[in-house]
Image (cartoon, rainbow, N blue to C red; front, top):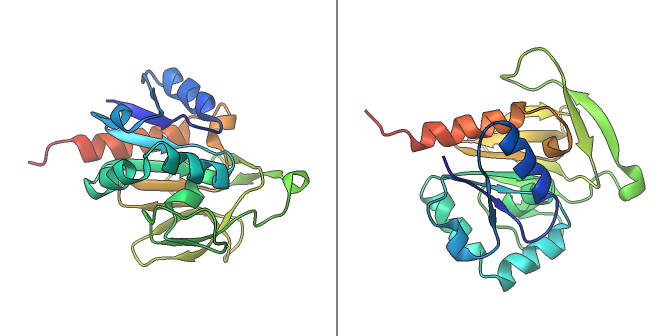
Length: 196
C-alpha cells in the first residue's frame, strides 16, 4: 500500500509519523509525478489559502482531481478538508470540489480561539476521540451521499465520509490515537482490493 502525504505546507510530518507507527511507509508528495502509483493521499492541515496557492503553483490540482475521479481514497484534515469541499463561504482558496460538502473556514475564530474536545465517532468503539481544533473549519452543508461521523452539535459536523473519501475539521495527526489513520487505510485497502 502506497500512501502519499501532500508535503508542500502544513503538518505533513505528523501524518507521516503516524503512518510509520502503523507500519506504512508514507511518501511525501510535492510534485505531480510523486502521485504516480499512490493508492491514497492525505491533504494535511496548514493554512488553506497558502495551501491552495501552492497546489496551483506546483500543478497538483488536476492530478489530485484525477485521483478522485479514479476512485482513489483521499483524506483532508482541517485545511485539507477546506480544499476537498465543493464550496466554501469565502472566495479564497478555490476548493477542489472532491466532496459534496460546504465548509466555513475559521468557523470558531482566530488562533487564540483554538480548542480541544472529546468526540464520539460513528463506527469507532465507545472510547471518545480527542479532537484538536486549530483555527478550524466546520461543515455547514452535507450532501445526500455524505455520512457524518462526528459533530460538535447537530448543525456542526466535523468529520465526514463520502465513499472512499474522508474529511476532518480537527487534527488526528497531532494525537497518538491512530484510529482515524487506520480508518483511512481501511478505505484505501477496500478501494484497492480487486472486485470478485
